[in-house]
Amino acid sequence: MSKILTIGEILVEIIATQRGDGFREAVPLIGPFPSGAPAIFIDQVGKLGQECAIISRVGDDDFGWVNIDRLEADGVDISGIEIVPQGTTGSAFVRYREDGSRAFVFNIRHSACGTIELSENTLALIDTCTHMHVMGTALYAPSVVKSILIATERVKALGGTVSFDPNLRPEILDAPGMREALQAVLAKTDLFMPSGEELFLFAEAKTEKEAVAELLAKGIKAIVIKRGDKGASYFDKDTWLDQSGYKVEEVDPTGAGDCFGAAFVTFWLAGLEPAAVLRYANASGARAVTKAGPMEGASTRAELDALIQSQGNA
Image 1 (tube, one colour):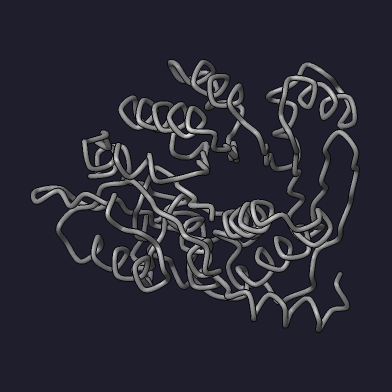
Image 2 (cartoon, one colour):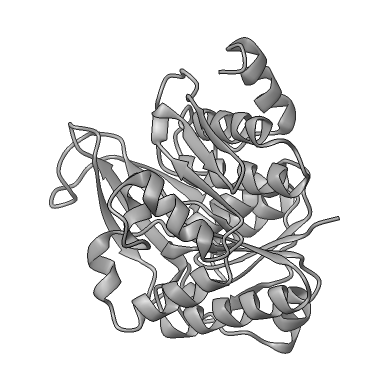
């Protein structure tokens, strides 16, 4: 049986209840909600009953424990989460603007998860895992990048597989060492999961079809392009498949892409046909936006089946 691993930030999200531009005035807040893209991803994996683990660090504070408690309750192996006695758990304050875009205030780089390093315990954990999922958001500090690259190498050396969700903005690519880290991960990637135009950050081709062909020729086994509420597309050497999304009432889109990725990786590793895997992934992303808080919309398989059945398989 597969065991899925990810490495990266664990934080809490605190959300403004009134829309507006930023935090330069006092506004009502709700939270803390468990968060962090890798944490959201792995929580959704665990909630689907798939064996999984995360390597990260939190402070010995309420924000850390609200995450640990949630992840453990949803079936995630938390043995790789180190508690830093004098550390502070990461945080993100979020306020939605009137147009639906978001303004963030982050504390990640200087929080406990900004100091992730591998230990004998976490190296042993890596060697129990058969799949590594890399998120671009986790490439935020040199020690974290190093840890991810080591884990990726070890999982591949043991015959495992790697998925990569870049989740990047073009301007981040010019951060010191970022391009090299991304290319190192891409070279080990079996399943590549960009969102929309992110595809062209990794290919020289100017059309989607040509970019997909270019990346598949480099040895990537499958590519999934996430298209938000419009659904997603799947490509491998034999298949080109488009699938529309599910119609739901959006409350909070944060974490939808992470839940989509978690469901896709889980069912892809289980050997389901691409169309079925896309249905589950689209359903997971759709359900994620129906709850306030990035991890609150994570779904069980029964909940995904119910949504798929209610909307005629999309």
